[in-house]
Length: 378
Image (cartoon, rainbow, N blue to C red; front, side, top):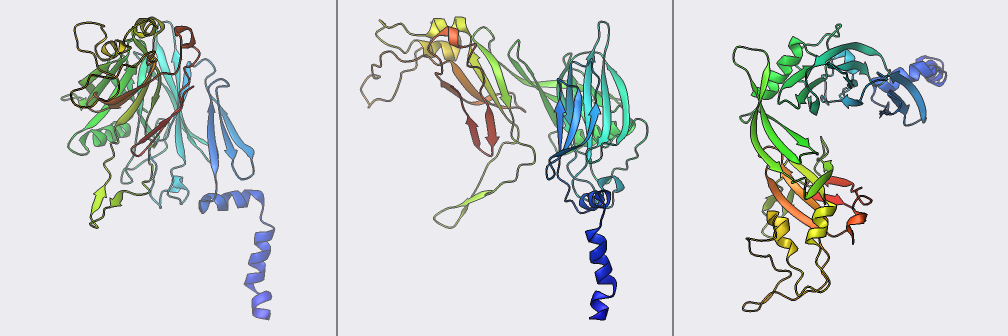
């Protein structure tokens, strides 16, 4: 009894009971108990970290107040257990913020590399850019790559795709370019990126290639898909969640064989809405004998020169069913392959009755999980 209650066990229990909040925070970080939500407010130009258990603000960091937009990059999800900056855990606590500052003659990107748990800024700098940014590609870092937090280094690396079909790397260091080299050389297919121009409706798929005898990179177009802006406008783009865990990668059939799921990691969901002018053209009149004329416009963009697609199904030898007052489709959901740039599947819905309602019903949230695409519209 004396050995148990009068010795080290009692003192250990006593030290745990009187442990300070700072020591408890260090313990939670060391054992992976810390649950911190890092939030970005573009209106306030600030990053805020919340403790999800205590529901209080841990730290906050101000960003450039004159920036057009801010983004958070968190590409590397795992670090080595012996990495001192990983705090002994397997989740990477280091994050990168990008702030795009647009000027009259030149533009730049201000970036900050910081610890998400404590708010400590490891490094920060400003990099000039020659053209606007159309896509930000977060890159994962491998555990064997050495890293030092110098004045211009960061574990997180972002590949910026510009509107003039050029690319740049943030931070612009030799280590960051080595990370891009590794991503380009990984596998047999290379590194693919894509850009979406909502004004022109162009979806462009490109591959990153390294220029000969140079440390810079170039983009080569692989495929394009155009959503005609005179007929439809892009209102939402959604992607599968990165790092999603498959609950059931296969299905057991009746003969005890396995049917493996085919999941396309390059799937992009593009939601478009018909323009008021196009919707007025394809909307059938009440006195029309058939309401099938608009299908030709949907498939070809013209109301002539092609056969019309019938509505519904019919028995062999019978004509298409005569459906009157059919609502014209106004909302379109397209599944696009970001590598080939081609449309894999496309469906349409009717969510408005008149062209005046199109500008009001443009909020279509989308969630992509495995082979399921869930969306809602009103």
